[in-house]
Length: 76
Image 1 (cartoon, rainbow, N blue to C red):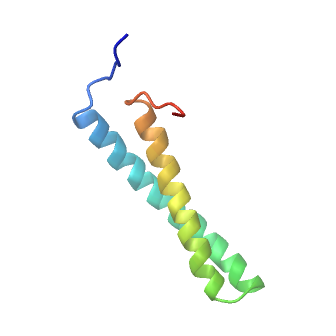
Image 2: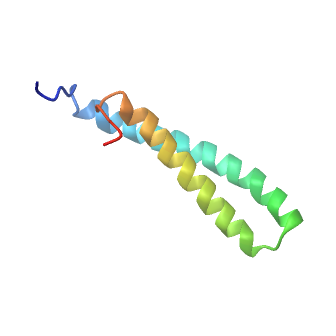
């Protein structure tokens, strides 16, 4: 049984780019909303941590969803 991969030229690059773009957009909106909530509860230093975690998670999740349709990803 061979590994079947769809055409991964521009399809993969285009999906990855679009996923990254959407992830940044959603991540920035979520990070802004959460940073205002965190600043009201804690100090400003925690805001940088929250923004970094939210942006990283949003971009990573969007890239995973975009690339999963082109590459056969497994848990291994």
